[in-house]
Structures are given as structure tokens and as C-alpha cells.
Image (cartoon, one colour):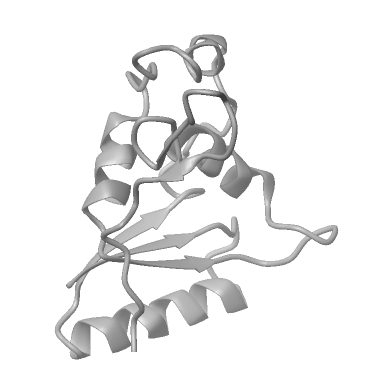
Length: 128
């Protein structure tokens, strides 16, 4: 099973990174194929681009700058998010990852009447 582990903490010697490392070891020991995405270490740019936002309701989402990240998400059969709670939410870099990577036509589809979204990440399963 392919597992995408996303960590969002800027300090390598943090509890989040320790938990992430232990999680990766555990998953690999159980035979999972793990892809580790460290948003800070890989300098993920969290700002949603104007062309990306304008393409949310277009026929094709402008994924030019996040194609690799979208591919990683779509190939994942399980997803682990490791992040601290700051100001009652997750870090801005993780919000940016959601905004830019969980994109229409990939993570979900808009309903034709612009009502409820239709999920597309049907390949995600529970990890035990």
C-alpha cells in the first residue's frame, strides 16, 4: 500500500518530526511504500496563485506548479498528516498545501450546479 506522510513543522528536532519518523518506521516495517513530504524542508510555496484560483471553476485546473504534489496525493492509498496545532488550527504551509494540491478535478469535482463537491480521492483507505 502506498502511504503519503506529510509533515508541517519548521523545526527538525521537534515532537512532530519525532512522531513523523516513528510513523514512517512503523509503516515501512509493515510493508507500506512510504512517500515523505516535509513541506518546510522542501520549501513548499503555500500561496495560491491567481491563475490557480481563477481556474477552480474552469474546465482544467492550472496545476503547472504543483503537478508532482497532486500526483503524490492521487497515488496515495493512505495519508498521514503530522502537524502542530497553532492558534487553534494547522500551520499556514499546510493550509496552502490543501489550497493548491487538493484541487478541483483531482481531489474533488464541483457539482454542475456549484452545490456540494464530489470527492475523487476514493483510493484512500484506513491504515491499521
